[in-house]
View 1 (cartoon, rainbow, N blue to C red):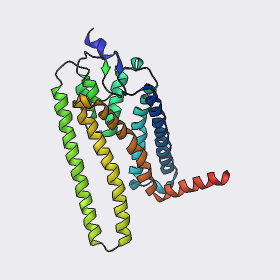
View 2 (tube, one colour):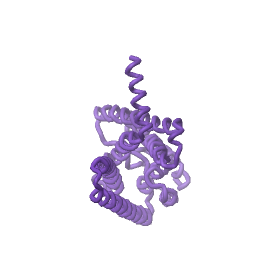
View 3 (tube, rainbow, N blue to C red):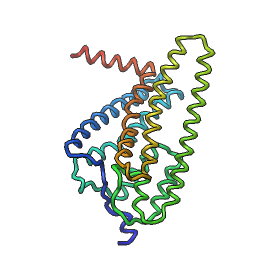
View 4 (cartoon, one colour):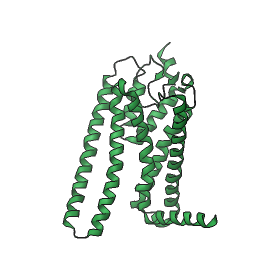
Length: 269
């Protein structure tokens, strides 16, 4: 079969290596998490769009973050839910769909190098038709090829290390400055609020950092494929679920509207 045929062929997604009983439990848990993510993030999007007092530059991040979470989660979870209740031998996806999924997954994570990274994988010819993962990502794409993928590996790992160092460096410097201000400030109420906010942010950041980079680095170690897939799911589910709680509820108007909505619901019962 020639390369052109492979390029648009149907691929088989390996999926999660779990029992049938466990797959139904995982389906319920993921479905509930997906519903919560969609409802909470869409609520914030609607509130920011409808509240004229929030139409300011400082609230753009509060609008972009839930939008990013909605898109990123929708690209991954519905497909994963379908595969959980599908026979492992029938988890098919076309090559084009796989490329689109990989593009949006990486666009959701790191936008600046997504096009180049996916292009490096798409340029390769294919000699395999099994996605050795539960989703389509860049590493899964270039693993379809029997060609030399040194360029892909070097570029991917180099960018990952640069991203890791720059991300951790900026966070450390930011929190050092916050710590200095807290130590020099005599306002205990402000310091307490800053420490509380920083702790929740660092917790979420740590979950994203560890799960994200574990998923990336373990792509090179096939013995830990199950750990990699779990880390990838954690990265796809936990941050989008916590972002509305940690960031969205910090906006006074959103918090008040939520409490008002819940109060009206309770009173109407």
